[in-house]
Length: 390
Ligand SMILES: NC(=O)c1ccc[n+]([C@@H]2O[C@H](COP(=O)([O-])OP(=O)(O)OC[C@H]3O[C@@H](n4cnc5c(N)ncnc54)[C@H](O)[C@@H]3O)[C@@H](O)[C@H]2O)c1
Image 1 (tube, protein in one colour):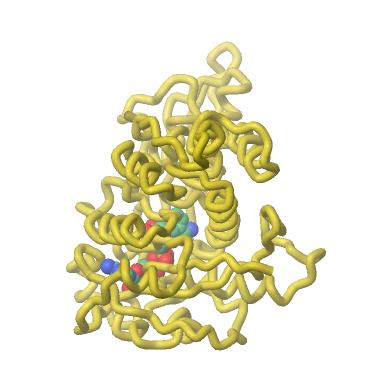
Image 2 (tube, protein in one colour):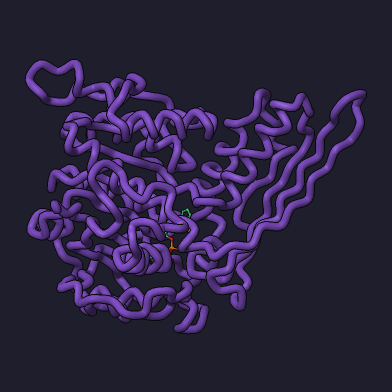
C-alpha cells in the first residue's frame, strides 16, 4: 500500500500524540479503532501515514531520532504508546524567527523551550529531499514569521500544507491564491479538537439558537500547564488565538454578540495541570417569556491527543486532494477540522460536506471543485475569499 509522506514542523506535545497515535492504531485491528473519526479515508488507514521529515529548534530535540524527540522535555503529554519503531528520521534545526517567546527563559528547563545554538537547515530543500507531500505545521501561537517561512517553503518545494496553528494562511485570500496557483492543497487554520472547548461551545450556541433561546452573554475560560499555555502568557502573541476561538463561536450564532458580551480565550497557565486542559463555559440567555436560562459547564481533556485524531483525518483529506489534483483550500475539510476556515459552516453541514468530499461526490465550489473544470487537468486559480470574521 502506498504511503502518505508527511513532514512536521514543531515536535511538541501535539506532534508527540500524533506520532504515538500512528503507531498505536497501526497495531490495532481494523475493528478496534475507538478514538478515531474515520478508520479509513479513501484507501488509507492511520498506518499508511509515514513521517519523513521533522523540524524543531529545541536543543533536547534537534539532532535526535524522531521517536526519541517526541518524549523529550518540555513535552508533557500522556505516553500511551511507549514502544516506537526506529523512524530513520532525525529532527532538523528549523529557523527560530519568532517561534520562542522571551518569557520562556524565565521558566524552569522542564517547562519551557531551550533553543539550540545551531544554523537552521534550508526548509524547502529538506522538504524536497525527504519526498514529503504534506507539511503539518505545529508551531507555537504567535509565530507569524515562522509559520510564513514554512508556508513559503511548501510553495517552493511543492508540498501541501496542513496548518494547525492560529496564524491565518488558509483563511487569507492571498495565501489561498498562491497555493492554488502552485497546484497545492491547503487545509487550515487552527485545528478544532475532537471534543474540545470550541466544538462544545459551538454546539451549545447552535442549540440556543435552534431552540429559540436568545443568548445574551457567554464566556469560555481555559487553563492548562503545557508549553502551549505557557507560550500564551505573552499577550502580544495571543491576538490571533483569541480571534480564532471567538469567531469560531460567533460564526454559529444567528446574531453576533457585542464584543463586550463574549469572552473566549486561553486564561492562565497552571504548571501542575501539564497537558490537562480545563475549560469553563458559561452561557446566559432568555427563553420563553424572557425566562432566564444559564449553563455552567466544566470540560476536562488531555489537550494534545484531543487534536491528534483530527489531524490524522485532515492529513488523509489533503492526500485525497493531492490525488484528485485539487488546489487551494479544501473547503469542507477546513470547515470541519479547523477553527478558522476560509468559510465557516455549521458543524453538521461541514460534516456532511466532508463526507461528500471523502466519498468523491458533489462538492461545493472551492478548491474541491476547481479541478473538475480544467480541461488540461491543472487546478483552476483560487477565486479568493474573505477571512473568517471579516
Ligand atoms: N488540542 C491542541 O493541543 C491544539 C488545538 C488547536 C491548536 N493547537 C495549536 O497547535 C500548536 C502546537 O501545539 P503544541 O501543544 O504541540 O505546542 P508545543 O509548545 O508543545 O510545541 C511547539 C513546538 O514547536 C517548536 N518550535 C518553536 N519554534 C519553532 C520553529 N521556528 N521551528 C520549528 N519548531 C519550533 C518548539 O520547540 C516545540 O517543540 C500550537 O500553536 C497550538 O495552539 C493545539
